[in-house]
Image (tube, rainbow, N blue to C red):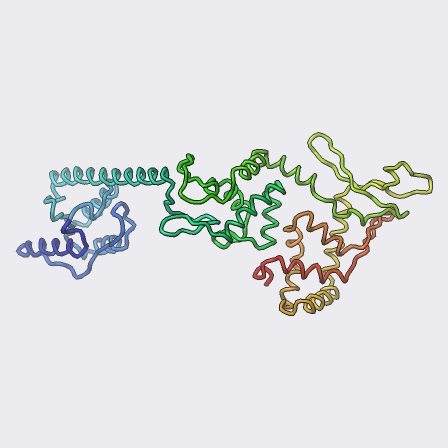
Length: 415
């Protein structure tokens, strides 16, 4: 233990070189020290410099305190010895006297290296056992700190603000039932992960499946009682995971069925009859329609003409397309900029224009109920007739919509 520092080891090596002065040995001024870097790898800066100097013919003899200071891997050391032999370089250990140029020296070297590698593997096993034992005691053993906690003196402590976010994620997933829809909502609202990234579906799934939030410390799939406070109760966890057990396709179909009709209450026939959303199911597929109340109540007569039943997706696509077309019009853009800045002078003109140009991306990130609300702000009436679909827009509502979207959207994403 008295030779455990780099300086002490170098003193011993320099003393050995001095004892070989009669052989013409001289210590080089360059130091090849890799302090703090394990000997189990050849990817060490000083070792790389040494190997380059060997290739350049600047080194004749390598002196170390012990051979495991150079490498603890038998395979790596074989590569080093090959380089030494190719460049006629001799290897000497101060505490283990041998010469690599002789067969006996090579045998001794291989035996010593085998024990060095054995020691390295035993140390690795002890570390793994220590890690597993600490996990069984519920201790935090490092890594990326999960959302909802901070680390204080190697213990997980609840972060109240982040813990509220975690509970919100579980509760909203329970209400919505779709990670895809929830991820779009969270991205639109600017909700971020522990590392500061916008919440995506992958991160959301990791949070929803992390038993750490139940107060457990998990090691290789086995949960142990942790020494940290739980954020999620068992009842909420069970409800969320009863949904997660369903296939994503089945959950997606549930979400589509539950999604509100965009044009409910604002779509009419040419005769002024309201059209109501309805749906039918064939096999595993759900089909949505807008149907006139005349047809539903069997009030059709010869005077009533025009389509009485239309695919909901077709009509909604036409209406949303009309909204997108109007938003791209220069005069509408200018009017909207003025309206937003009158209410929110802090929002720059370039930010508003960029947001309007990226309306398609904003629209896709919104959840169905929010899309329906925006359509009702922008559309006064949709009339379906033999000549097609007529959309009456409220241009004055666009300013309020963009102001609303910019308020819920991360500002750096708008710039």
